Length: 340
Image 1: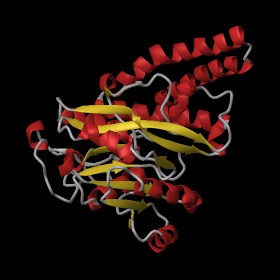
Image 2: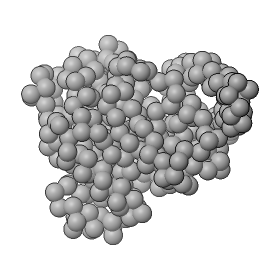
Image 3: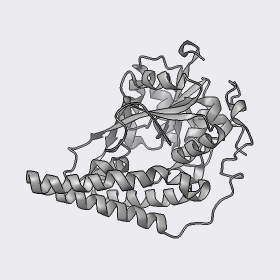
């Protein structure tokens, strides 16, 4: 399918009026895209007052309550159900996209063998970046970390602010809700698990990381604190353990092994070099933060796990029996048929 035949719906999930101005900025950045956006869908998770405000003050967007289980996954699945376009993209409610963000991603997803594409997320710190914070752990604040590809490259999975063919997401059954972020709890992993599931359905398919497709992700002061850093690392470890239980440790931790073996040791050495070669005492602190972050993530991974949920049933995503040939057929079915 050529780019001229594609249209796109962009979905934003939100839950609190505290992010109102960020949400307004995110919507405005979508209005200014060089690739025309057919519809902007804002799904509100558990906040009727915010939903009413969106409908009143942003009348040009499609506003809906979350019709599924509370959390980011249910909100995104609601948006996918509502979307009228062949392509869907997800954007965080506290992020703004550069004008060519969608155009860069669509360069890749116009190829039917590309399942989804994601871009780089740059931190927009409320205050300046803490000098102790290692960019090898930028994922803690929802941003691209040191060591990610510097040019377009196939990867295991893309992140939340992604662009994909809607029918692929439909056939996969959408996002798994027991890995979702709920409110301000720093959990996640539903994007990774969905990408791995899609890859199993389409063995020849690819996920493309396109660093030129940039968003700017707001990082509030509360997420610049040491306590949040450790809490987020611990929750990430728990999420990785759940993903490994669903898809197996070999697939679920493939990228993480490379990250731990290559990127983190380089970060530690760089921090030590900054201190002893450039008299930057915070280099030593950054090296220590990498070690502490890794240890805390490992502790979360090894923590006792809740009982594993069934893949199909109330509040979960069923995985329909389909093959790669079926997925390559364009559909115009506007329901997430894989979910019960």
